[in-house]
Length: 338
Length: 262
Image (tube, rainbow over all chains, first blue to last red; front, top):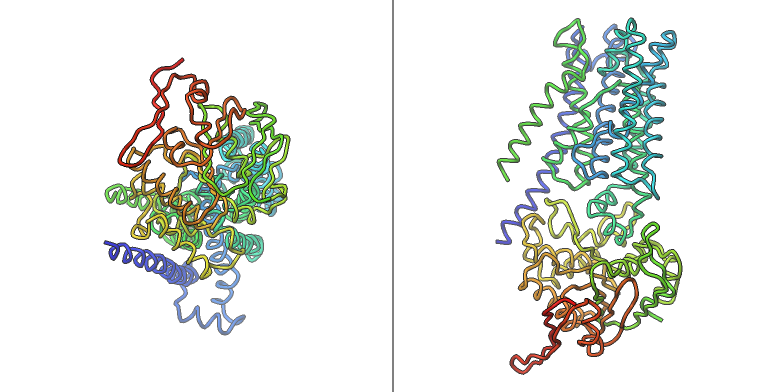
């Protein structure tokens, strides 16, 4: 009897490793594909040539100035959003939590929309405005939910209230400036059409902070799953840890939203799916979520710019179309299994 | 001195004062049960011992030092606490859970040491959970799950074990099983065990000392023989009860049979 369970533990280890390896391979394939595909298709051999002998060809210019920053942004935004969602789902112990719940989307949306409508000449500053708006909204949610540290239940309620308030602001803007709504639609749907090395520089530091932060905190995040009292008696500073983790989640999501626009869905679905695949231990769950978040967004971005080429479709639409059915399939399969 | 000493403690949740001017000294490795009616402050008292509730007045001393001067990790290595209804992700295995008990011994990046593994395996052994160590928590029965949690508490190699109603939700067989296990653990480790118990007969049989609490005050505190009497139990719970002795084999059990409310 014990034998079966010993085997099962081995299977669990193997499966976790396999998922991470598969993720790495998939991500690599997606990244190469993403550099190849687009309005002009560049074969692998030419990608290789362009990269090894830089600065000489037209291919190189396309790859270096357009596609590489775009691919990197898409992958990092996906990873950051998925990590953020994963952390929030863990802290709130609620599988339906996502970065939107701490006001990120609403804050970024209102700030970016206001800038695009009220000061169209400053469109270049949209990413900064979105970042500031996201963090501003998260800070308001934070303050409202503060009670010797962040109280999870109050956080959810404050998040809903703040999102509604900022959402109202967005609706008001689109009513009063209905002629300018068109220009904001594609930003609101999310995408990487304007991604440049500048965008990469905006998001990279936060991805690094996210990776370091999760490495430091995953054990305590695991301990928090046992409830506040048990976590405290395991030596975890519960309030401090929770506050740091939520701040981390806010930074990760805000940086992603600032380069990608309102990219919903990733932060909710990817961690949830990974939980079904590798289980609820955050040691494999966090890296797997980041990896597959990157794969999903980078992959969806390929589809977004090739399927209806030369027209580009906002990447968020593709993600919903790929992800939602897959998510339902997994849920259904698990229900049948248990 | 070693152990826990509470001096002039006031405990409150927000504005609601649960207990005031509380004095408790626990300086011997013995099994102590806190008894008393619902809402009397039993669990609150236990939480204060684990520093889960900070007193608004007074001081808790641990080994003669103000408990607040201990770091979280240092305190975690001395005191284990099991809440009344502990929850964990269902897909976590027993061993994963027990290894969490080694968290206070680990640095930020260091992984599990030989000592950690040994302590966890020993804790599994002591709670007879070795066979079930790779089972998921969701696959365990109520009794097994409680033993898994006890194993987590033991993996910390604590000096003081605090248990908040450990037998709630268990049937009679598993209740006895758990109480026997706790008594056996006490015999082998001689650590201090303090628990909140609802079942008076368990409290009387398995403890050395009883602390009776009512409305935030300690009514009586002493050896079982002194506390477990008709004169104390009846007013404590506002019941009418017979406290009598039953002989089974060569053993004499003191039991309490409540038969009416007052």
